[in-house]
Image (cartoon, rainbow, N blue to C red; front, side, top):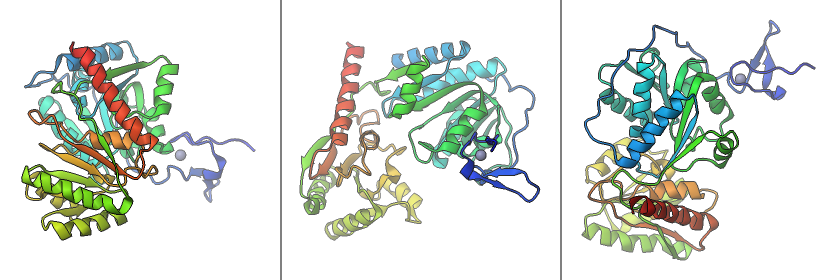
Length: 386
Ligand SMILES: [Zn+2]
C-alpha cells in the first residue's frame, strides 16, 4: 500500500487516516483544526520599535546576537532563566524583520499569555497593526505583527519570515505532534524558540544542526535566583509544616503560593489550611472563579493560594513566597516544573529574594537537579558580573 503523508501536519502513521465517501483521505491527527487561513497581503508596515525603558547590558548583547542570526538566516534557541525578560530580547529582531518587509509572528501555547503579549507588543510598536488570534478570536487574521496561540498556526501555512515561539516546554505544546508540525509548517524563514527549561530533544537538535543556542543567566534586575530549600517531612505532616510557615509569612505580610500535585491534594490541603486561616483560597483548573481569585490575590486581598501547576508559570507578584507540598511526586514534579515554580519568586525589582521550599519524604533526582540548575545559573551570573 502506498504511504500517505498528511499535507497539513506531516503525519505518516497510516492508522490515523480515514477515507471519505468520495475516496479522498482525511487525517484524524489534525482534523479538529479547521477554519479560514490568512491571506498574504501587502508587506508589513516598517514600524519602529518604541521602548521607554533600557535593556540590561546582557539583554542588549543577546538582542543584538538574535538580530545578527536573523539576518544570517539562522534559527536561535534562547535558554533564559525565569524572570530574565525574554520578551524584550526579541523586540529588536521584530523591528528588523518589519524594516526588511518580512513577516513576524509570535506564538505561545497558552491563551492568557498570548493576550498579555499582545498588549506588550502593541505598546512596543505603536505604529504597527498588531493582531491577536486564539480560539474564539479568529476574525482578523492579517496584520503587521501577529500574536497567536500555537493552536492557530495552521491558519498560516508558509507565512512567517520570523516566527518566535515562547514557552516551548509548556503544556499543551510540549511533545504535541500536531502543534510541533504546525510550527514547522508556518515558518518559511527563521525560528526563535524560547524557554527557561528547554526540552532535551530540542537542545540536542539545535546542537546537532549547529543552530544558535543563546544563554541568559541574568534576571533583568541582575540579582541571583532564590535557591530552593528541601525539607524532609512525612507526607501527612507536610501541610501542617506549611501552616507553620504561612503563619510567619502572614506576620510579615508576604503572599504565598502553596503548590499541591493533584486537584485532590490541593482540595485536601486547602481544607486543612482553611481550618487554621480563614482567608486562604484554593485555585485549580476546575475552579470556575479562578481568574477572580487570582486577581484578588494579586491585589493582596487573599494572603495565600493553594494551587496545582495551573499557576506554575506567568504569575509575577511582589514579594511572593512558594511552598511545594509532596515535591517528591516525580510524575508531576520533574526538574523543569520545579524550576518554573521556583522561578515565580524574587522577580520584582526591590524584592529579589524570597523562600522556595520543597517538602517531601525523599529528595528525588528531580529536586536535586532543579536546585543544581538554579545554582549553576547563579554561578554563571556571578562570573558574568565579575
Ligand atoms: Zn494531519
